[in-house]
Length: 235
Length: 114
Image 1 (cartoon, rainbow over the protein chains, first blue to last red):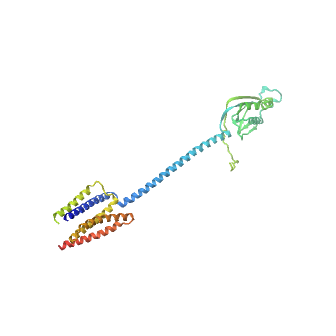
Image 2: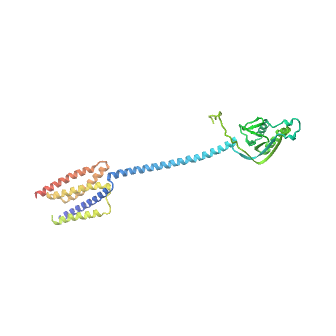
Image 3: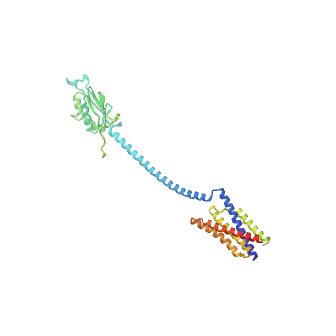
């Protein structure tokens, strides 16, 4: 009986000593660190922040993807727009172009070449150039210039004695017309019997037509302004 | 209750403290609260046993079972209270604290009467 009591008392003393010592150490270590409630709060906060961080990270990925898509689209759109701009500038005649074509040189009759009494009065007029331009247009010319002046849709060829104005610039004989297109077609359109070349020659003008493998027609350099014309809404 | 009893008690305590101080692990902070309540309950049981011995009504089985069940119950209550969002360990602290002081008072009176 006594032994049992001793044993149980020993056991109880042992357990109490153990617990007290453990608790003592634990409490000591807690005091060195942060209080329990604070650490709990902080751990909860940490968990929240971790989940928040994950959400934000996924959001970042999403946004990066969107940006990439957008930039990709932007680059494509830019390419398309640049291409379109090039085409438009080409069509408008704002860029110098080169290709096969013909050069027509027109000059007034020289003094010694007089064939008849009326010939000396003759000089090449704006109408002659206009006819020439019209003829070339009809033959499928793609770009042309008169003495370096690119012929646009709005270009005027106008008699302003004693000169001819093209693109508000005075030009003087001899007139060099550069035309890019199929050289054969252009030449035949002018040299057809009863055609413009023959007509001008019959008036005494010097007409020379030459084919070239590669011609360069300059672009229109002055700014183009639209003060009255506005694009319609449909376009 | 001779020298042997004191040797046993102090020896047990010393061994327990030594082991507790040298155990390589610590109680996690979360569970330190439960252990403190368990210690309080255990101390209460010990003083209850001392008082019973002085009143000559000491029962070894009651003492042992009371010691362990009180400690475990106190810790368990504190744990459940924590899960329920209640500071139930406060109740254990108050209850065992009151009993502890009552036991101490009775022991003191017995000692004074001698």
